[in-house]
Length: 304
Image (cartoon, rainbow, N blue to C red; front, side):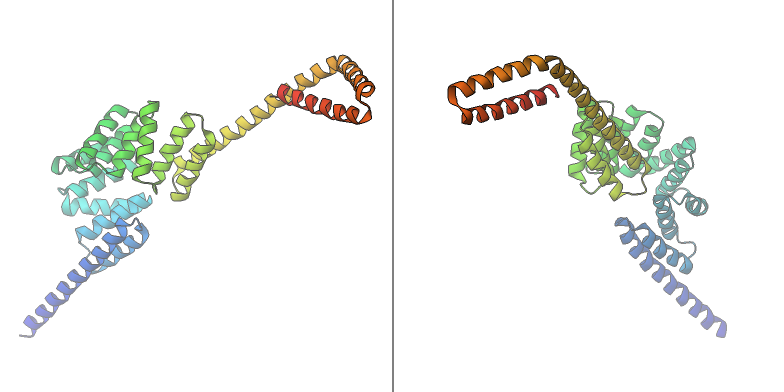
């Protein structure tokens, strides 16, 4: 009788732990959707203390670590998931995500193909497309992005991938970057691609604005920071080039003025003498001011 009561209490306690773990997972899912990965990971971790084999908590925790770039922390969790639930499409997706981060694209593509075979999800197409994009297979990346957009037209990662994959085509790239920014004005990648489009078109200052916004939205994204530094460097070089050209032109103007100075001075003196004889001192002063203004205008035009 005592054994039965103990067994019942244990069962009730386990069930309560199971319910509490599910509640924590639901809270973590909401935080994950808001991209608050640190807080979501904390909730998933709490759920795992109550239910260590919860595949929902394990998947969530692995996804948090991968999105935060904590590959070493994610690796044992993904291996545990593969032991518990290897046939699940999301588990295969996380394994592909992990192996892509580890620099093993063949293994990553093996798992993502398995995930797509079980479920056609735009997130899966985006990951497979990004693997191809990283290895310079831009056409394949674009086709995979379009497959994802066919399933969900406003899927942000697929839209970003489609824009990135046609970066060598100026007009479509510019149009895609504009559309992406309208779709996701608070996306670091949207601002990054808009900046790239401006940079390609030599609007360096506008490019810098978007690169700065991309870095502000995602300070840990090295590609955005590299693009910002490149654009700022190009802006500085452009400024020095303009200054050099002005100095060269000013030098030419100065040499021209020096060579022509005797003739100019003679003409000015004759003109002033005529003004003095004809109209007197007041008009002589006005004529002198007019001559100075004309010379300044000529010099400024020569310096351009």
